[in-house]
Amino acid sequence: MSRRINIAIDGPASSGKSTTAKLAAEKLGYIYIDTGAMYRAATLAVNDEGVDINDEQAVTSCINNHRISISIKEKQQRTYLDDQDVTDQLRTPQINKTISVISSYKEVRKAMVEQQRQLAEKGGVIMDGRDIGTVVLPDAELKVFMIASLEERAKRRFIELEAQGIRQTLEEVKEDIRKRDRIDSSRSLAPLKKAEGAKELDTTGLTIEEQLKIILDWVDIAISEKKRC
Ligand code: DC
Image 1: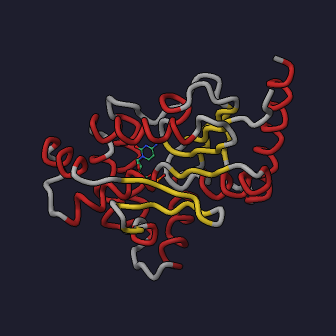
Image 2 (image 1 turned 135 degrees about the vertical axis):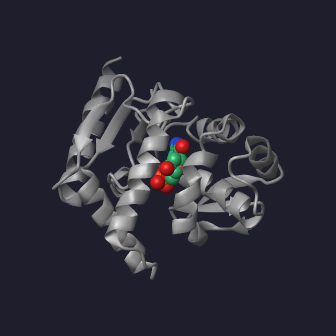
């Protein structure tokens, strides 16, 4: 029996999901999939076309006119909008402001979830997002719910934006995150919440190495439990 498991990591913005998941994937030789990038590419299309984000039908039809896909190149995920590689255009304040509304729409989610499930069919995937343990991969052998204080998450995002040359005050970043958390957790469809059986990891005050070690220990346990079955 294959010992490659699937790992689902959910949690609010900047809780440490992607950094930890990427490093864990590297260590394990697994594929890391950032599902947020797919919703970001959808949002880019909607913003670029000037569609009213509150008009669900218009948003859905805009997204249905495009193909959003990902591929793994040199172990890195690249995200495409139609044939264009948009990976480097996805982490902007403009997208951060509108993404939660767009990703709350039913048809938008349906298309993404189908693709994400296909990507995990063969196992050996670490996928992060908001609904991975609850909706996309409820049977993942390891489910993690990652959290951190709002203060710490805002600081992390602020540093990330600064490194990209994007200027926002810490207060603005904090407000964006707070708003996004509220919409992501309260939407009726696939809200952000801890999945049944998920292990909670609070990354406040932890180093990346500490977070990674905890995840890798949990992976070992999940693999040995799978072997026993
Ligand atoms: O992980 P991220 O910060 O790049 O995600 C951006 C937004 O995309 C997030 O605020 C909500 C949405 N998202 C989602 O609804 N479901 C996912 N599986 C991943 C992201």
